[in-house]
Length: 213
Image (cartoon, rainbow, N blue to C red; front, side):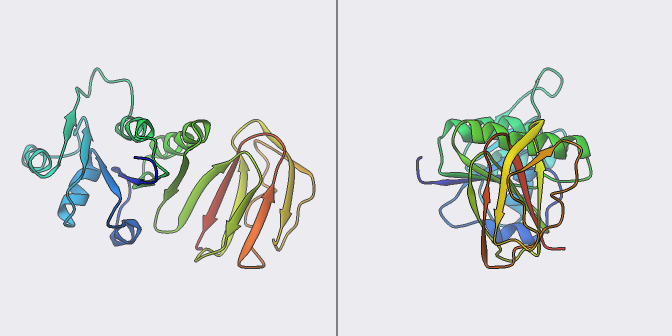
């Protein structure tokens, strides 16, 4: 499956904005209620997986009948969240990229756990992003070019205890060989001055959060 994108749609906050991220040749993974969202919007998930404790019995049967592959599990005895199960499956396919939709929602614990999944993708050398109506979130550990696109702000937060050697090019508020430690807000709400910028770093894992507001 090298060269393919995998889109994981999970059970957080979803809306019409999510449909714009789906391309015709994407591999679609419906995680729990995310599978229902895909089906209700005219998509047939390549695989639906989870414990499906957030759907009704009738909705579950619709998901089962409308998915190419259906994988369910006991909600009591499973150790992983539905999203992590889907993410692990996606990693095993060795795609070019994984996008998570619906990974941010009202449950902050699930949202934060989903952000941590990006680290697992990075460790396996697979490009990953979380996208919602207002944000795109990635994790980097080496110098990376960032396009402004439709986003107005960009924030940098350490995912490891500290990130060293941060130098920014093309940003309104520059940093040169800076160190960010967990608990510091120095990297919040920067702005790309040009259509593209560069983030250089030496050590650590850095969350890059692009926002529209």
